[in-house]
Image 1 (cartoon, rainbow, N blue to C red):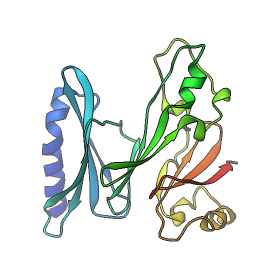
Image 2: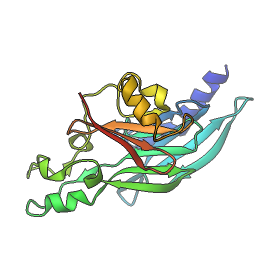
Image 3: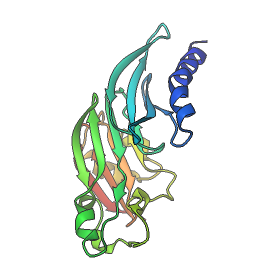
Image 4: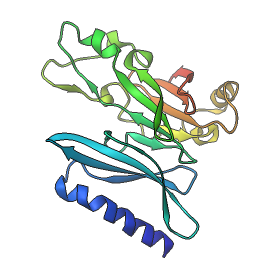
Length: 216
């Protein structure tokens, strides 16, 4: 009954946004190790598209407590990752393709990852920090270069947020041992694979890149 009432309430929160615009839609992201979830809702103001991301905690009596909120922000499903305690968030940011003569220079400086704590941004990661921009392929006929051109879209095991033990299906024992030298057991980590076949691992607390390896 508790779980049912929670999802009915979430559905009521989301239905207004869904009715006004079926695509993009509202959706829920569950924290990986807590009774917290993120409700992402699209919004429109003066014909401008945006959104609101709100984190809720499920209390023992089944009611919901609002933890924090990020305004003027929307990400499509599969591009936001809620931390275990509900305090942290990692967001994959869509990047824009620019003019052909300067596209790689400008793209290199665009933000592609954002790290948050309690609704406040703590770290931004630019494209040039995760891939070699000079080796990316571009199309002059599209307005947006999808983040799938930066990160792999064909990997069921990444992106992923959690502790080192959560990465056993991607990193072997020696890789996890190497990663353990650069983090603590309780550290929350975010792992993602680039289109250039590199595995990157960040500390969620500060957004620092602590591990980088060419994937097999």
